[in-house]
Length: 261
Ligand code: ADP
View 1 (tube, helix red, strand yellow):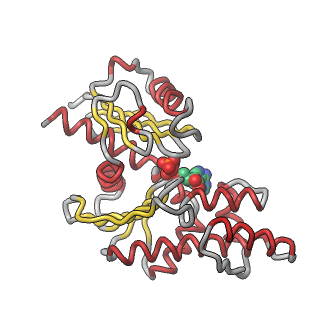
View 2: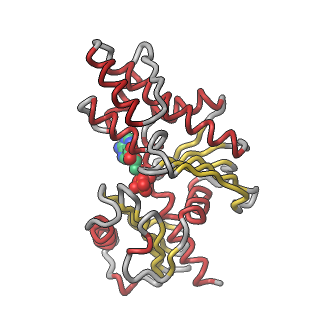
């Protein structure tokens, strides 16, 4: 049995994710710290994952760093782009996915994978906060809620308050004025989710949709956004409970493949 231990570290803009893999297959431990690049998040995620797996860092055969802050993670054996790691990780989570939509804290990407999981093309929005996790964080703050509350509020909505501004700053003002006008909070949340879905669907359509479609990244944990995106694209979207760890899983897999090459 292959006992090789590899570690993937995804240093995100908002969250640090660390995952330890045995034999390129078994997930021994994972840690997710809601603090991203430039903070203690990466170090804490590493320590937590090692502790959960009862391992020392010296026992890890290869460390691969990915994500927005990958260049700042000390001691990585490999530093690999998010696109490669997300493609690898998403495919490990869902062996059939041909289109992967990843929405993180600061960007949104659409990836087109071949039948064997090879990356055939991608499109990315990393210029504008609208349609990213940041947009949802800003809106949650205005509503005095946590991002983790939004999916359930969306489910309770019996209508939708549409958000017409595409810019995060203007959309924030729009939500504030709707709140002042007595709009229903849950309906507002549904409108906010729809706004993210419209932007993401347009990105994915420009790339071209090949089914099945999977979603990764932290925003995939928000079932309200997933449902809104399904409605926009007119197709089912597969989501793994480990969606936010896709990049870290891909990084750990990358290390394992490199060691075998
Ligand atoms: P990054 O790699 O840029 O740090 P992630 O893929 O980790 O981004 O996603 C971070 C985003 O995920 C946050 O901006 C937030 O919108 C969303 N998110 C994180 N946790 C949850 C949760 N429990 N429920 C809903 N959304 C979440």
